[in-house]
Image 1: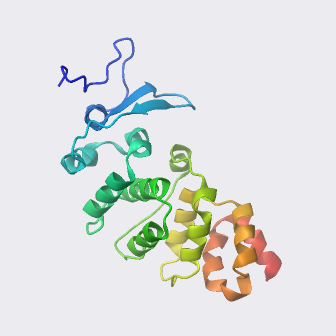
Image 2: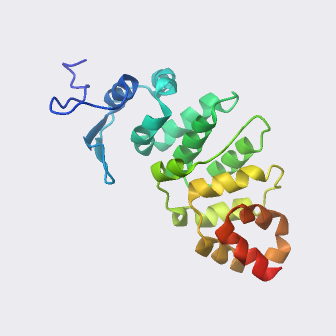
Length: 209
């Protein structure tokens, strides 16, 4: 493996990431130039290692290390990861990272629909903490149009997960205000109610009602 230059090495630093993470990065083709600090930098060059053979390995990666892996997964591999767990009962953190991976790599309505269908299942749990948000930067504007179109068409059956999903997507009060212009509150009350889980967005609803 060393002859193929698959191992990322830096003899001047002691890595704080797990062996599983380092092995995944080496096999997948991720090489970090700067892993720590606010600005992280890595180079991704595919080693053409079959992702199917990495699924067992990614299951062993500590949740705290997924922030080093997920940004460099391809759209296709994110979908393969999702397909491997969508019929299982998995930990909340895995749900968070897989959904995040899907949405940062694919903003299509088809993928957004898949996310909502998955979250609508009673066995699926989703809870977001502040440190999760810090590890999951997201530009909602890149998926806003498709997201709102899907969101206002679905039947909200388990609204408590909606607030968590909106936190992952880092939807702001300005984003909600733009949605109101196209999707009036009086026509979509059931869809706007879950947004009140976010105190900043609640003012919009209170102003209307």
